[in-house]
Amino acid sequence: MNLRVDPFEWAGGHPGLDFVNTLDDRPSTSPVETLGTYQDLVRFAEMADIIDPQLAAKLLRFNTSRASEVVMRTRKLREHLFNILMSLHRDQPAKQADLEAVSLAIQAGHQARVLVKAAPPKLTEYCWRPLEADILLHACSLAVERLLAEVDRSKVRKCGASDCDVFYLDHSKGQKRLWCSMKGCGNREKQRRRRSGLAKE
Ligand SMILES: [Zn+2]
Image (cartoon, rainbow, N blue to C red; front, side, top):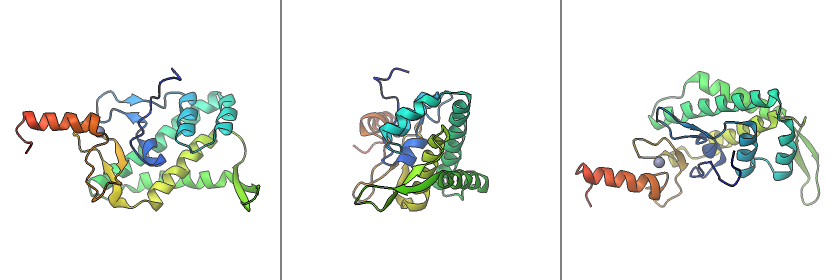
């Protein structure tokens, strides 16, 4: 991967949504996998600020067959989250199988952390144990937990463009943000509506 180019979609406004958006160009027939390799996953986790740069450097050393398996499991977690978000977007209940798969991943994420001593002003802090590739999956799971357990449902939106399934947190006043990006989907959709005579402007 070309490290100078940032391949990730950061419109989510929350690490859990940035995570679900790592399969880019949904719902096309050929979505773009930005978590193609273990290095991609390390880079995403570091850029999303769910692991720190020192840990990212250490985790890059674990590029083994086990690491490839972690990438596959992380992608599966992402797809369970996507299914949950799409159900909620359609005002349907999330499937229990998706919720259970995500719950198990979150439980494993909690079990992979221990409290250790910390410098003041902290009393203690969490540390991942043991140091292994799975930390990346666990860090994504806990970001998903924060999204699903703490975020106001009404603020989680899917891009309004018919050909874009990017999810984002809508912090706009009155929650009127319609697009993942005004420059991209917003302009494209406005042009499309104008051509079909749907636009008022
Ligand atoms: Zn979009």
